[in-house]
Length: 267
Image (cartoon, rainbow, N blue to C red; front, side, top):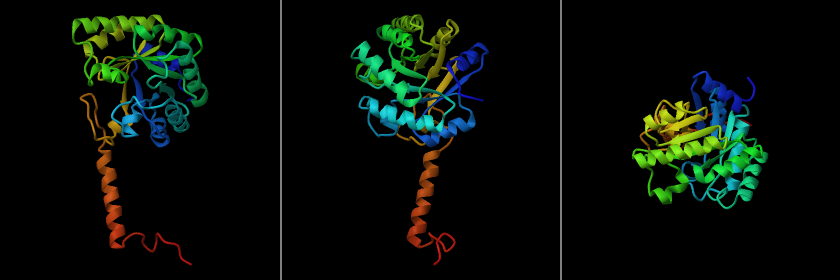
């Protein structure tokens, strides 16, 4: 079918077809996404929590994001690849942000970078797009601002918050941003934004009216047990399957049942 592109995703929105995106960090899960026909893979800085066992996304480095993005690209060579720009990789200056985003695009084979924020990053988004770097926006609850929010929360329930989110959305739209992730946003507001714009919306905790949905691989297959937000649907109990297999291996080794004669080499 060839590599999926931004044009592919735009056509899906125009046709009213839903877009599927999975956030993942390794070759094997990316390969699974490719094999079943997921549209897009996002190498999210959530790898800090899910893959590295950290409390937040903040310590994740640019080099770590590039490493994981390279691995994911090898597993999913044909899917639309988006890479999160980690905390402080784009906030220092426009020049440094362009340099860092350019490095991600050159070294990983990504087709877009994702940055958090609205009006405050609109100028940067415009500059990046002018430089040939497609930008995915991220509004609502933005994990890199955890110390501002204090804790994960739904954003846009209050009139003032909703109006600010509308302004941020319009600012990104005006900058030419083609895709915006809406995280933890009331579904009515997400529906309004989706239907009012040609921008592709990807929801995570933003209801079913977005143009597409994203979940973390480890969440949807039930591998990550530390937290289960309301918006996560587990399609498998992966952690239980894996732990059952490890338990059986341990018991077989301790009983002397593994390896068997058939699993051993002769002279």
